[in-house]
Amino acid sequence: MRQAGDDPRVLDLSFNSPLLKQRIKNTVYLPTSYRTGGPRFPVMYALHGTVFSPLDNCALNSATSIDVFLRMIACGGGDVQDKLYNIPAQLDKMNFIVVSPDTDPTDSVCETCVWIDGRNDLLPNVRPATANTLPADSFLHKELYPLVETLFSTRTDRGGRGVMGFSMGAWAAELQGMMHPDQYSYIGYVSGGYDIFEPELTTVLNGLGYLRDQGYGTAVTDEIWWHQYNPKDIASNIRGTNIKFFLSRGDACLKLSSLTAPDCQGQYSPLRSATGSLVEQMLQRNTIIGVNDLPTKGIPFEAVELPGIHGSNNHRVFADYIVPQANATFASAVAQPQEFAYRAVLPRFSVWGYDVSVKRPNDEFLSLTGVRMDGRSMTITGSGMVDVMTPPVFRAGRTYTITATVDGQTSTRQVTADGDGRLREIVDLGKGTLIDARSLLDNLGIAKPRTVMIHVEG
Image 1 (cartoon, rainbow, N blue to C red):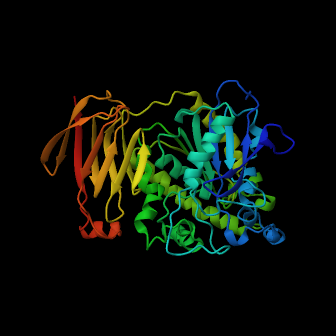
Image 2 (image 1 turned 30 degrees about the horizontal axis):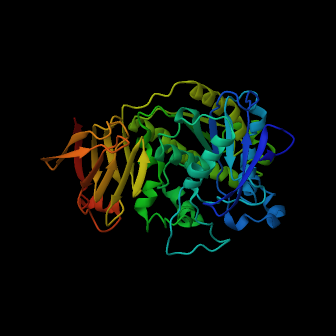
Image 3 (image 1 turned 30 degrees about the vertical axis):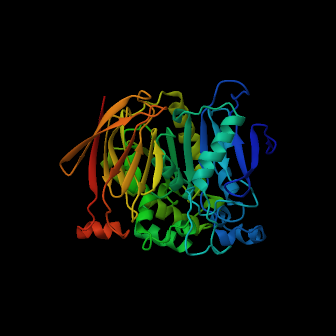
């Protein structure tokens, strides 16, 4: 770890990642008030957006530099996009650390990774036409976060951790918050997508290979996995969790009132960067889908629209909105929910102290609702054999009675808490269907997931 430039508060944190199998550079921004050995500080993780694999070559800089948007997605795009926030100008006002992963100015690791874990796929990735498949989510949670929390005086509770992102990184920040609602108290979304099944956005994502490069095919071949990574489909995971959710979008500099705005001038003029204006128009429309959808799900949020093409107002969004919001969020006590709901296609996941795995012949959503934090009650809907481990909230060695109700039939069994005070329950929800086209099956009335209600007494 070393000073990244002239400012001693901006550090280069580089290390060899066993998961990524290469060296990765990250940038750490320490607020002026931070002191080694002093009070523990919250941390905001800033995820960059798309770096287009065919353009991720510094030999092309003379060509990509003619357009500000092309420069954002070309060689070292993670570093270029990180600088759009102008974080050093806010170090006096920030009461939190910012960590930006993947900021090598000559080599981006995450190009179209969406900061999720990839999987093996029959279609090979061929550089530079496609990006590498990465365990990006695992890298964040198993390598970067623990390292930051070891090297710096930081908080490790979710009340002291936030995630923000720009463009693809905004999509990723939403997914982080919605897939790991127990890990964050703040989500900052800057000009991203909310519904990847909106036709205009789906066409772009399919064409550029975002989820395909991570092993999840297209919206047609792997529909159910696209739903897993669609914020609109899993937004309910953050309902009732007290996460601060902020969304910002640009107006693409097309309003009369924006013609003279500073963020619509010079290199950011839509006349100089038509592509940046078109991209922001598309994402503006997609963000509005989220603004209209979130209230129907009972999820509080704050949204703002500012003058600017794609990326041009990021410095203003960070200074005027994210910094004061994050300061307030991290300074407040974030209440834990008494119960929660969670849905995922993932074959195994951990959330709010529960460990869940499912074996089934097909991929589909498993839904948990009414899950009490004390482990006493939950409802499970889906298919397959579901294995649930409760949080360590029971008395070790004590025997409890578990009642399961399926299709009106009730059964009971005795289960003894393990040495950590956890109970294990295995539930058979049936085989379900043999194929994964869930929306088609739902429309035809073929897909019929089963529901099991579980109660613990004793």
